[in-house]
Image (cartoon, rainbow, N blue to C red):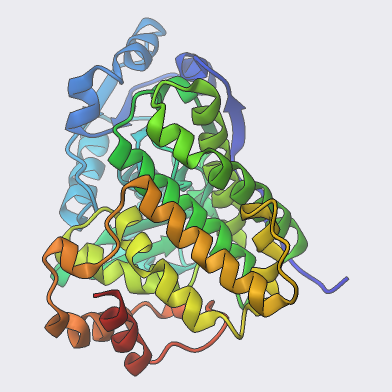
Length: 381
């Protein structure tokens, strides 16, 4: 066995209704509750917030988190927590509220300057007790030590450090029942990309992340279309939520790569949902990687295509890419840049922006140059 390091994620509580038990996991004192206006408006946070208040823990509600949260939003959340002397943080929602909650809990606990901790393993201080409750099955943010924030010019910066790992993740499938098809599809595809890129990660791929990625891919690809077409199907929702969590554990150890690197400029500059931007670049980056990652793609093919009978790794890799593209389309996601009003003339700018994602590009199975990136954006147009 070659040497490797594997970091487990947060302690996990899973099951229908389990989000109502979060008060039992927190210390006394005020709690910063990070979410977004839509979830609060829909009443999804009501039961959890009442449980906390009934336990004697005052709630400091911060529901100003937007998609692709900005540095301004993060700093406002930190200020709200600091003003109330909160003793704990809950992130409730999709990846954006959870990312803000993670980094807010760290900055409140450590007192560090944000500009000193961008990057990998630079945040080394303490953080406040933290619980993450996902309401979508996709980002896996509740499992990871990563927080991605959109900064000046639409550039996405990240803090990736073990102190950001939550104390607890709570997977309650009831919170995801009835999600709109578009959200279910986009977040599900995001999780599928996490599993695939973790399995083919060039630097830190290891046997444990591989096992998690394979099971995540099985759960996600088997249940994605059911969750899209039967939004009340609790079994499919449970499988998607668990699959997204396992994929999050996988890629927090074996980091994602080229698909995400090329997706980020589309989100940062055009404010498209993260899962949609991954879907737009998935086929094209996988085809670019298909020779370097051929054996790994061939190993994944029977998971996604149970009746796969193709002979040879090249044929199986091609079948995997085709089936994943088919799943994206059947989920209802449009797969061309032009479908979102993006002009082909933007390809050079997008390629330059993608080259800034060095922390991701280094994990890709083969090099993606700026010229490669421009070609891939043009192919996606």
